[in-house]
Image 1: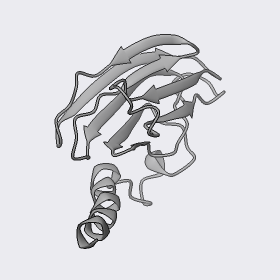
Image 2: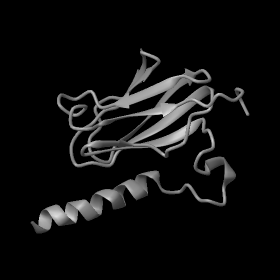
Image 3: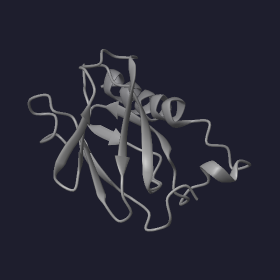
Image 4: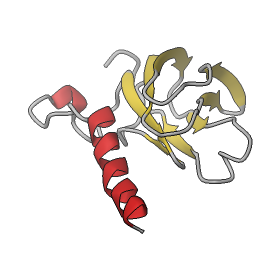
Length: 133
């Protein structure tokens, strides 16, 4: 029972480290504002983003496996697969770059068997604003 309780405390702490650094003083990283770059954390059994929409244009996702098991991340934009990381060992990171247009929907998920069904998927919207704002 103690091991489970420890894991529950460490998992959110690990995600805070992965997604940390979004200081409120920096308006470019304020929640709700569109972003060209975002950090994505992979854990058992979640895909965690910064919670901001993506800005139209070129996008860069910095994907970190903050879990204890191997994970990967695939990206589909409006039904078209755009990018996929290699399988990442715990602690490994990989960058993905691709382009998106205004109002598209970006789906993120782990392709390893059973991981999507366990909850490792999420989606990001692309802001309707102008490219390069």
